[in-house]
Image 1: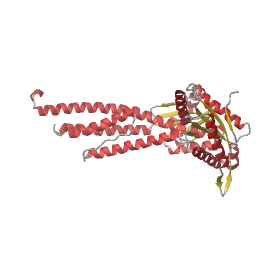
Image 2: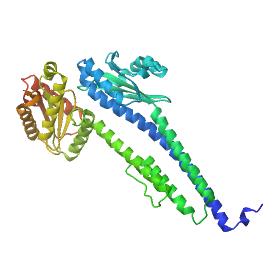
Image 3: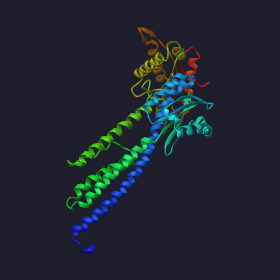
Image 4: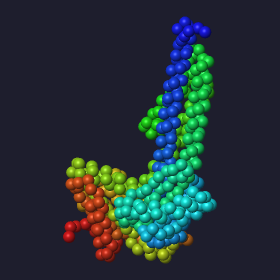
Length: 423
């Protein structure tokens, strides 16, 4: 047997390059698998948390007004997410208020979780209600999230979602299979190609690995692999790019769902609070005024009781449309509760904020809402206004004061705008 040093340089390069490429490939595959596992695990849990946040925002009114039918209907809409095994609403006393029943509930793992849930809620009561922090975890066969349901800044109950991890496992199996197939094909190619052609075959492989590394590191799916060869790599790259594009579109859709109120299309409470923090921080740094206007639809419960919830929803959408139309281009309009809306007025002092609020109030008062067979109704709103040049980045005080102004407007005759003033 000839010694390695006696082989020709061609064979030496082939062996060295093949071995180096094989080792590098194995390392990158191992890292990609590890990163894919961590990424998909976090993504699955984040997806479930986003669904829970959206559902909890929608369930606020139902739980606040003890509307079991609405709660059951809203929970029923979760059937579009097949991996959810069960959804349970508990009130502030820890008692079940509404349950999303599925056949999966008969599974032993679900039965065991439901049996342990009261103890879990009891142990985390302070975190869920006092600190208003959600709870989530993922295990081998299931994952769950417990989200506080808030109303007027107070936790009035919790929403628990339990889901299986089949989709996560399928993605990981698919990723492992794809990586294994690519690795095996690459090793076979490296073993049999000549030194002159090795670059043709290894370059595309390292190209896609680099893209995978970039995605795993930056979580940025706005990337693609450019096919420079008209062979199997072009088909692989095409499908890979299609997959990345679908993931990017899905993330954009989830982002919209996480920041948008489903009924009105306005920003939801969570997004409004994030934008408020940004607005307060900027105003404090630049020493500028900003304004808050909080609206509440007058006698909205009476509208629901007399005309029904579909008409109530129509009223909310009509009010949301008027507020959006009359707001300035750079202001944010959000729905923060059942019939409560919040307008964030950037660079707006008390006079400007009051003018905006009054314009919106008049617009809603004069609107005629047609709801069925030529029937119409008109609604009014009460508004509270608070404008300040903040000295700190605290958002609790502005929210509390604009809420006090709204409270004064509601208890001094409604259909009016009241400004917060220190007593």
